Image 1 (tube, rainbow, N blue to C red):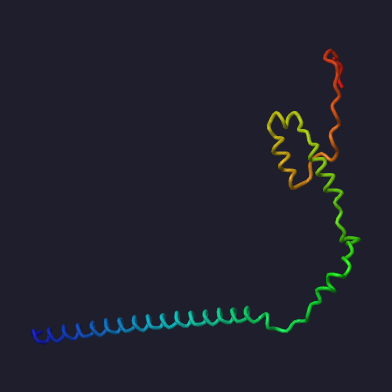
Image 2 (cartoon, rainbow, N blue to C red; image 1 turned 120 degrees about the horizontal axis):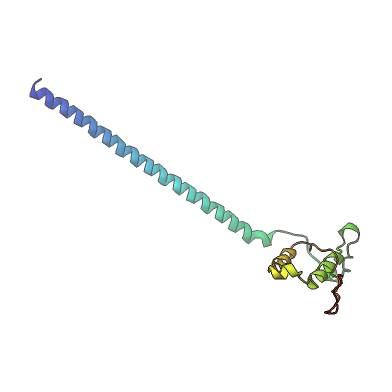
Length: 147
């Protein structure tokens, strides 16, 4: 091969590489323009949604609603208390609060510092003991009989 044919082959290769780089740059520019247009369209839609919401908020007072007779509403009798299954019965919760306030820890709970944990576990549930503790009876020191 002659030098001249080598140069012409090299020149053809260089032209193809330049054309490929040019097409790549044009494709990047087109992609960037498409991205810019998509962002602009998204921003335009967001602005339109915000303006529609603002218009809705500012026009609520203009809508015609049924007039309210505040005087008649104030003079109306109070609603009656619910009865039957909807009535609120607080007896059990009051009894649970009374048991909780009268709680005395056992020996083991005091010894192992479990009274605090036991009492805190009751705050959202029922205590283990359903009846209050019986008061302890005192016995003389020299009494050796078992209780």
